[in-house]
Length: 317
Image (cartoon, rainbow, N blue to C red; front, top):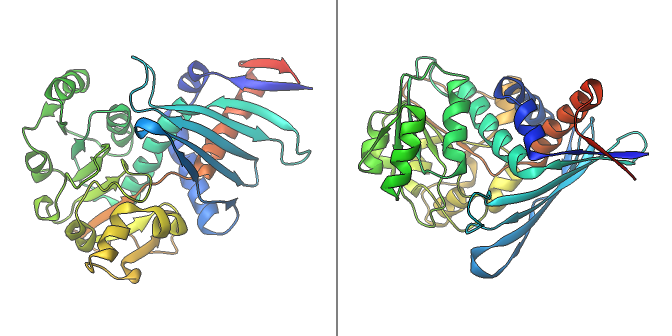
């Protein structure tokens, strides 16, 4: 018996957005239709804003868990999210593979946003604004370009030098303010580590679609409650957003919205059982917390490819 080990390089080389975006659609449909099982993520807070998280779940293809550390001030060049996804054979229960979680998480998060964008953004959306300059900023630019013919990308970040470096790499322009970045955007992705709102509802034009990605737990919020109120608000996982979706919880607390303001899960939109955009002027928002079924679906896809094509490392077990 051997254990397949897939490195960060393996994931990067074999999980293109063209493959991962459809995987995210199928995984989220399965979640919304009750064909998967998962627990809410468990997070242990550490000193210095660091954390350790565990995300277990099952789906038809596989079962497993993601174990991940979040070290925002990681060593130079290291991702802030580091860990592994452990996958088990659904027929025998035997451990099947260990997959690098940092690269897998980076790709599947952006791919899930792209799938939501494809379902919720206007068909003629061409202008993208990215708020934040961390790991997910570049990933979202690449992923959104896979579902819409983006003609203009605008970037805002607290650190001007990082924003300029990302702009040079992607052919984007740098905005002086968040308001400037959002003003002309058809699609906005917030991928910050902000604790308080950086994007306000009054800056967002009718018809805009938003992917709210940076906050993955109760507490830190990237957008204000007015923006939540204005939007047709969709969750990746409804239970997760109702218990850990910071922006939605804050809007509830402030009385800006009621419990029924959460329209439902993006998987139901993908499946055609829930209406997404109802008109050209809707503001739509997809709240991404991240779901273990996304990791399982992408991870098992890699396992099957590695087995068929003969790459990855095999360790006696």
